[in-house]
Amino acid sequence: MALVFSIKAQKDGRRSADAAVASVKEARLSRVASEKSAAVAAETLADQRREAAERRAEEEEANRPRAVLTIEHSRKAVWQLINSGTAAAENVRCEERPEAMVRGWPDGLSIPAGEVHEFMMAGSMQASIPPVLRVTWDGQEEPVPLRVPPRVD
Image (cartoon, rainbow, N blue to C red; front, side, top):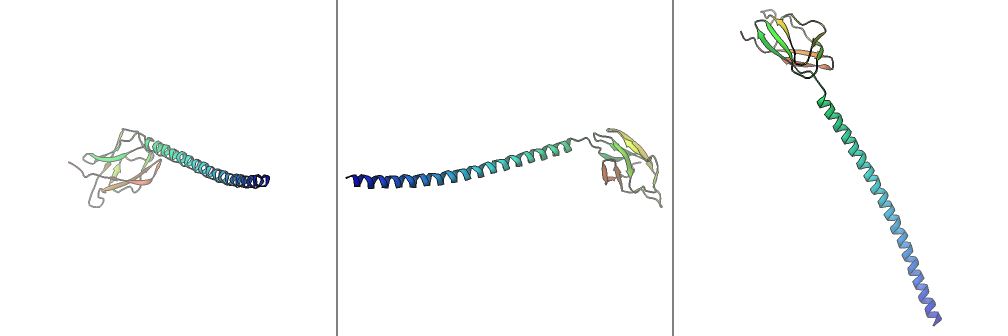
């Protein structure tokens, strides 16, 4: 009888040891899964922070005051360079000053936001009024093509 109890106890002990080994394996798998989950969560948080920073930078750039220049014909040989933006256009330069430009476009021209600057162009057979003027200003180094409307006399 003692032998039967001993064999039974040994089998129970073996089952208990197997269960303990299985439990350790499960704990390891759980730890690995938990570490992976934490790494994914940290990566996701970093992505969210980066996206939020990019969004803020884009919003700041979109809301940054900027000059918006256009040209309109005023009268006879007079055109207006209009700044309809929210920032001054400093040091406005005409990249290829046409021969038809008579006066009114000084070096270092600045046009405050909401202001107009008049200049003159007189076309002739030798020096026609160009359809486009390419201009740059401080903060806008890439030339911006401005359409020159025809004279309305």
